Amino acid sequence: SVSPVLPARGTESGCRSPPGLALFSLRRACMILVMAQRPGYLIYQEPPRRPLTARNLEDFALCPQKFLLSFFVSPAQSDRFRGGPAALQRAARAALLACYREGGPAQVPVERLLEAFEAHWDGSLCADSLEEEQLHRQGQEMLRRYHEQHAAAPTRVLAVDQRLEAEIGGHRFVAVADRVDDLGQGTLLLRYRTTRDMPGPKALAKDLSTALLLLVGEAAYQRPAQAAIYALRAGRLVVAEISPAQKRAWEEEIVARAAQVRAARDYPTNVGQHCRVCRCRPLCPAWHPPKPEAEEGRQ
Image (cartoon, rainbow, N blue to C red; front, side, top):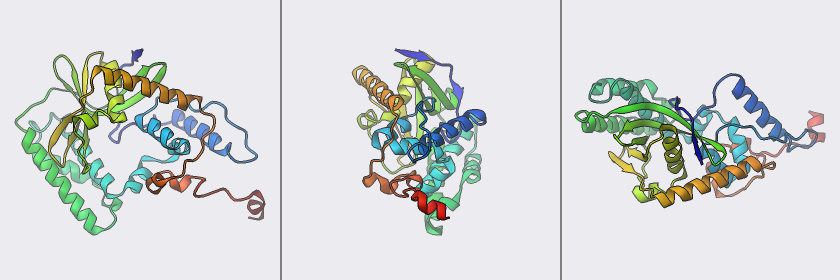
């Protein structure tokens, strides 16, 4: 069963915990969980409750310790770990969101779109000046091409940077759509992507994040939806081809994964090749084991 929750606006960088006490309580609970793995600390029996994201589910399946530690990795730290590609994705996305808040390319001149890109560009994330120059130029080219392709094609946009939340199978989930378009009888839930890879419609249908966006979006708006990405490098819209049977299978899969997360009381590390590109590695006990108590006492 899927229970809708009224949509609420998201943030420019995606799903984020609300500021203030809720975030403090969440991080405090997570810290107790982390400390529980070391001698001399009490075990916190109830994991922190919050709507689950696709990344949460993927992290837990890959490495339960990564799922736990991810609560301590800030958006800025995550971007710094990803480097230049994060700078490109963040700036291009922010520029397009700002553009559509003002009516889209049909209403906003290309110069203003590029100004927004410049305002959100953070070259310090790049490895060196050469990478910064290349990615910055690519971002400008992508946005110029996008504006040219869409300036004469007004779109009825229902929402921009929309945080969507719903209960599915007794578990709460959240996803963010960069843009929600009105298709008449349904909605288009769109995300922008600057990465080099461009999956086709069938490959996109196998993506957990896309499937969760579709399920949560349909519950939130209470009408049929399509989930899609706009590949800015290729200048193409890719709509996921998710059949009714696939949608049911995804719902079962997502609910089963959420049940595993909620039932967990132990968060072991799963060391493997994925550790090389893990944003949580600086905090991971597998790579930075705690010092023996005797050694800590001497310090």
